[in-house]
Amino acid sequence: MNSRRNFFKAASLTGGAIAAAAVSKVALAALPEAASQTSPETMPPLVPSTGRPCNPVVTLNGWTLPWRMNQGVKEFHLVAEPVVREMAPGMKAHLWGYNGQSPGPTIEVVEGDRVRIFVTNRLPEHTSVHWHGQRVPNGMDGVSGLTQPAIQSGKTFVYEFVARRPGTYMYHPHADEMTQMAMGMMGSWITHPKGKHPLIADVDRDFVFLLNAYDIEPGASTPNIMTMTEFNLWSWNSRVFPGIDSLNVRLNDKVRIRIGNLTMTNHPIHLHGHDFAVTGTDGGAVPLSARWPEVTTDIAVGQMRQIELIANELGDWAFHCHKSHHTMNAMGHTVPTMIGVDHSEISEKINKLIPDYMTMGERGMADMGMMSMPLPDNTLPMMTGEGPFGSVEMGGMFSVFKVRKDQKPGDYKDPGWYKHPPGTQAYEYTGPMAEPVRSHEAGEMLMPMHDKKMPEVEVQVRKPTGHSGH
Image (cartoon, rainbow, N blue to C red; front, side):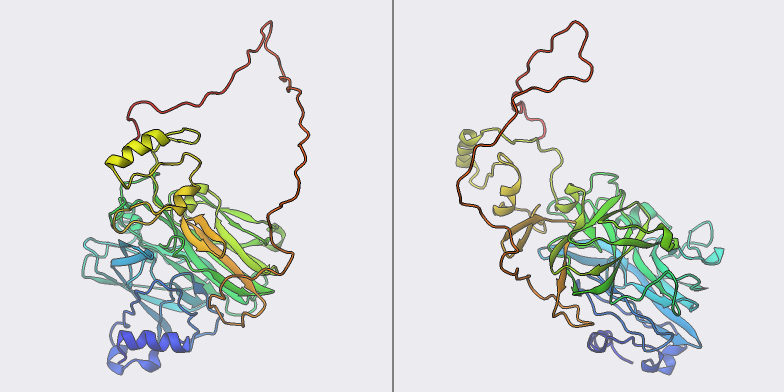
């Protein structure tokens, strides 16, 4: 029987699933092999070599779980276990996940498949698995205490059902959910249509990832599971920029991107340079009459959105959450705003005592992205990532959608930075500047106050006092 190392070597070279033909007869009578993956890189799509054919997805900074066919049943083996996840180069988090990763591997099946999932629990507490959005028998729904006993540590449970509806789904625990989901336990599930579908188009590129969030104190590596709102690491598939891979496509490719939200807030996901349509949710395909063009779609907690577009604009296009604090890495929320406050004199005095002291945000926060501020071990800068023209000044939920003419079909490799044709890039103007024309008339109130003249008020800079927030 192939070792796990050889298993992934073969999968990465061929793009094929290791199924029943590559497994010994002894193994066929027992559990399927629990494949594992620890690399944070985006793995090639897993082209099926057994079972019904499909056009497989690419999991951003993730992979697809191999299966075996056993007398017509597609069998998978999920292992719930503690994992170490590199969130970006320079930081690793101690999370919980499945088969060596957080999120766990994507499970891909085809409409009509009978699916059998073995779930082994290697966590220090009980767990279960809920198949979010799926139509399953009630006893397979994965809510511990309600539809099944919890899976105790060291035990293996079996879930079996027919994948009835094509679409984009998730899996996650319904046992000590606050802890286990806050620790990273989740994964994507894709059910492909078994043939031509009136509402599900054929695409050239098909991506999937989950939105998740963590509160990890600077210098620490384990999330604070008690956090409800003040998260400091907003991530895609437990990766933050610049650790999130780019989405690389060919010019005029039909592209589908599937996104699920298992954070504690909504996320307006925005793509530059293109418009798209929301073509599916975790409830199924959206009717054609209900679709309209968008450049941003808001994904609420517990929802999945499937967007589709034609990649018809060359370039490196930003792709990100439009909540500005969600495109930054670990930051303090209690630091006062110091914009406009001249503290050069006090900074000079402090530097004599603390040589590494750095002034915070006197001119805005962009300077912080370019300074080499000393950080605790295992901590990422707040704004980071170098582009072809300098600091991108981003973190968190940010990536790049790269469209190229010469990207070959089926090639997902990073093509490097886009080279702008002459005359198509912003440039510095060095000519004469005319005086701007300004209006000096003050605006009037819609409803002036009765018998009172409004005093003119000069806005003063309010300097912080005391030590609050320092």
